[in-house]
Image (cartoon, rainbow, N blue to C red; front, side, top):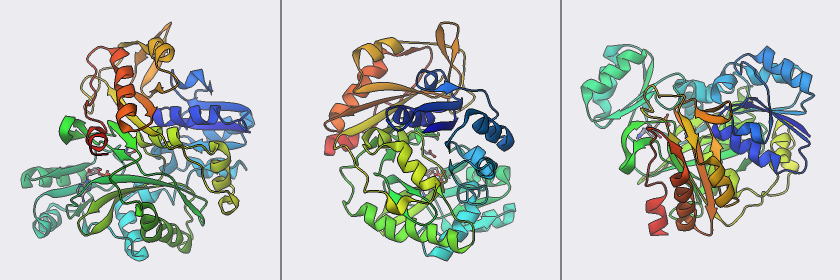
Length: 417
Ligand code: AMP
Ligand code: GLY
């Protein structure tokens, strides 16, 4: 199978790594990719937001399956353009991607499907926002209605800060605060059949102890030893299948990856958000454990054949990923700094630990930083303790001036397991 992956993050590196290990994949392309992806796939320049350009590239390469990684191209309709060119594509249509692209749309679908989520108001004026904030009380949760790369949400006890964020965004969703641990559960779907993957936990805040601003995600682990073994079945029944059914009922079937961001509250499971694509960095740990070859799974979703797929196979190992970010992330990051130690990790730590690239590019013989999240150092082990030891040993070999990473990824779960 000739496969083209669209995107350039650590998620796309994880996808390409798994695809490169799948014997069914005979040619692997990525556009635009990054320095690390270039080691497992052939890179091509493309404007990932330009559907016509992506479809033309896929046609030229003879791609038999296109996988669209990030949300921005999906919301821009890139999957539609590829589908119109007659090529199977893993990723929802522009309309279906509104499940991620508009928080208000997602709330409407959840209400219609009876999916448990935080009570909320959509507000477009400061007066409406003030009333909604008052109705729920602190802590206040204010979400930009549109895409914001994980940074559009403010959770605060400070009423003035909540009002200021609402005013700055314009259209916002204001909702009740959900208390409890968060879980990311991904499901592969063809619009009808839903196949859940294994749950993972992401660390959204920039600093140890869940301090600091929200980011795109600073690390993740899987499995979740503390979670109820029935969690996946429950979320399938109350969240994933009803949502996919409701989208189909509306005439906008959702095919691709449905990501449920969940809070496990004292009153039960609640959806925090939907995403229309694989999560980053959770994908790094989920794919590290998946034993079913990836290309066949995603092709079955792209072509409406998931019902015929045998059950997924999983490794019993644990996986941990630690994100190494640039100086000043999630603010405007400093870029262009050389990254050292990548060869040492490859020589000393593989195959149990490996580096997935996010914001990197080649500069002559060197690899330099090119974004906020730079690397996602991923490791597997017999349990979370071993996986996190291996991940942090590999992180310690990496040199990047001014870089930052959290030191507590999976620490609590490993200690309690
Ligand atoms: P989102 O972009 O909707 O995933 O929100 C980013 C992060 O903000 C989530 O991962 C949570 O940590 C936090 N958050 C969002 N909504 C709520 C809520 N209703 N209650 C508590 N925390 C929330
Ligand atoms: N890890 C959070 C996200 O992918 O949105």
